[in-house]
Amino acid sequence: MRNKDWTLVIFTTLTQASVGIILCLTLLNYLGADVGPIVQQGLSLKNPVFLAIAFAGIATLISFLHLGSPSNAPNALNNLSGSWISREILALAIYSLSLLVTMVLGWGDWTHRYLAHLLVLNAISGLALLWMMIRIYVMPTIPPWNSWYTGASFVSTAVCLGLLTFLLLSQAEFVGLDDRAGGFLATFLIAVLVIELLAALFHQRRLNQMDTGFDGPILERGIFYRLFLLRMTMLTVSVLMTAFLFLVSGSFPESGQYLWAYALFFLVLVQEFVGRLLFYSSYFRIGV
Amino acid sequence: MKRLAFYFDSASCSGCKTCQMACKDKNDLAIGQIWRRVYEVAGGSWKQAGLAWKHDVFAYNLSMSCNHCADPICARNCPTRAIWKREDGIVQINQDLCIGCKYCAWVCPYGAPQFNPEKGVMGKCDLCADYIDEGKNPSCVDACPMRALDFGDYDELLEKHGGSDHIYPLPDNSITEPSLCIKAHKNAGNLNPCVVNVEEVKRAQ
Image (cartoon, rainbow over all chains, first blue to last red; front, side, top):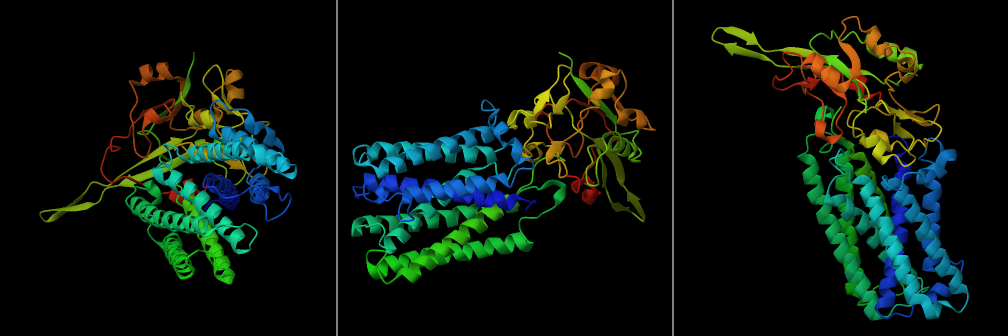
């Protein structure tokens, strides 16, 4: 991994976690859960919209550390017609603004009336942001990123972290989920983790077969490969833990299992960071 | 529209790296910054032929800087429009606009844009645009003792040198359409070529 890429690891993971939270909130609303009171909690960690804004805000601040000349940052919007980075920054601004509108309206009584529309607006702007982020990395001159895996990994990061945040909020009894909604989220989480596991295995196989030019093979041995094995182990344990918690309690998460729930959240979070670290570390480009 | 380009004669290059030093000197580049790099390519091996051993060992050099591509992938993707193209085809970086996101360095298949940690912005070969404006040659061209480097309009260079070759380790020309005319070393098409000074050329990126 090149110097300062850690800032991109944090920026992309947190932004995607933010989008994931909003997608889950919209999904829950669509499933008929009463999410109105949840988004009326203002500047509270119990409020998923506030959490999503906080994640996006922290991610934005950290992204400045990646820049060599942060004072020139406003220029990043100069090339909206050609650059996916410019579009991503604009999408991030629109997404954050739409979340702010939802949160501010949540303080009043207006949210109940317009909540479904606002959440759809938030989700669409979040998906647009996710799309722009994916397009930045899908470049023909960077073979390891120029694949379906980039999109799959970004989307699965968003969904996994969004789902887990809700399960955690539910565990802390900040969000009331009925058995049906809780069961749905847990099953969905297991499915996404399994897909992520299989996608990572297929992608690693593809990386192993790549011609890395005169750099020589770097993706099938050494620290890179050990980190990949660590991530696969963490993913497998995460799937088993989620299944165990869900099957044991019948409706994950059961109160009293909060330690397990926090452990699961931490495990998946670390796994996502390791996955993103591997993503950036796999960089090589064609040519000289 | 004019399209200024470099010409490189791989058959004549001795690998002395005077071009590299002239570029560093002219642009006052710090340690680690090499806008023009010389790739040392070698390959071949020994083979037994009856009682004798014969070899097909070969070596050649490739001096490479920014190729001022007709379709520069760096400029296309630069979020600030700091990378732009002059009327004569020279691709330049306006460091007053650059945010130092390094995306151009990620995507350029020639490793041309390089991050300057002191200034916090990207830099690269500008074909010595100031010299060209004064009617002079780029410093690397004038410094080459073997006259392996030349520059001029791309079409005129192709006509003058009878076309252009594609040699290892250059990427497919169709990606960015580099303004580079190359005369290949006679062994450039041999099997199993590899860059032997990887540490040197990679450290500059």
